[in-house]
Length: 465
Image (tube, rainbow, N blue to C red; front, side, top):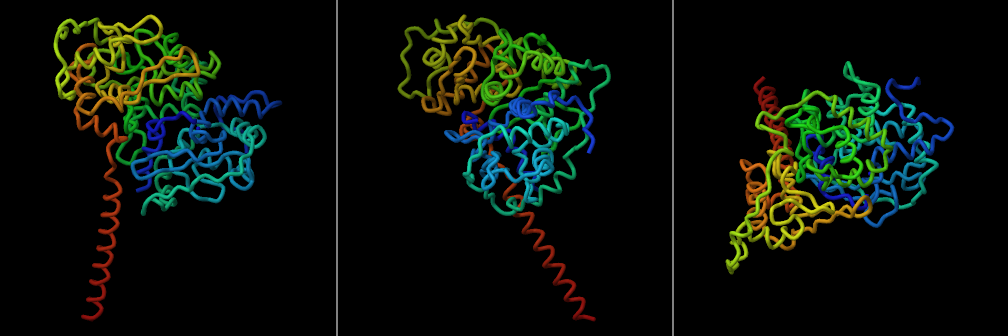
């Protein structure tokens, strides 16, 4: 809920939209323990829920909305959730606030689109919901500016259609911890699902864009970036990571010898995870280590286990660059754009610039993150060390990005995985276009034709009688 949030992270929640459109305290480990200061507790919960990222436009005021969230069917603009009585939620009751956050229903009764991860927030306890309400009503500065309204094409502008999807996929039951989970892991599960909504990004989805049963946290495409498998599986997931490595990654975006954050995960760390207490992060790590393992049958070893030092630059010394820059070889492109930071052998540097071998970005069976890192770069300014990789989208053509990405995979990553130029073009454009709009319209047209034919048939029968 951030001014720096990328198109890809917004899409990872907006990606749910296309097919989605076809009192006692609740049980659970509530986190708002200090009832004497609900506003402060609510602020902490809002940080854990990363609310500011989606509800703050670039250059805008916190929580005033207006952030453009690009989905395959159009742009959704986030709402103003400040306590403004004219443009925000200042007139919401606690019950209306809870319905919006946990059920995706606004105060006026209209349905929200699932760019808002209310299917995860549905697990927030009543106690924590009350603290969130106290914070947004009394701890946030009101902003009397209405965001641009969302106008999706017909038939997806009919918000009521979300009610049918909710009836299938919105689970309002409290979280059910697995047997044998420690108290810390149970708390981590609540943090990771109800607030951080890890499942929203990392769980694959079925045709109707509901989370696939039995594959929780098993990895999913977000349209551009890929949210990898973070289940406890030792090969496909994070079972081979130590708890300390997971905590380091969640806190700083760095797990030496394993991975570094970029794209959507980088933003989650910047705006939410790095602000959590160390015990919070440890609880999340313990939960991840206790989740049911999800194995991808094509994985033969962990993503971080691929590659070794490999210096191919001596092979191009003395060679002239081709006149057609699209004909540059992988080593030539690497020498020109990568070697000064990642070093000739791919070993990286000692000041935070990562090694290319033993790097999960190059070890997954889906290479989209390799391409996205080249196109968009990595800028973590604002926390830890300012680890910066420039974006090369303006410098490299699709052909060059394809050549470079495949060279990186072959030299230091998973050599059986290849990048196609067509996929590079799709990722540069924001992901593959959705076929759902024409399908929905054709389906609607077909339905109208069927109804008309039925009416004609009934009229003919009446005349014959």
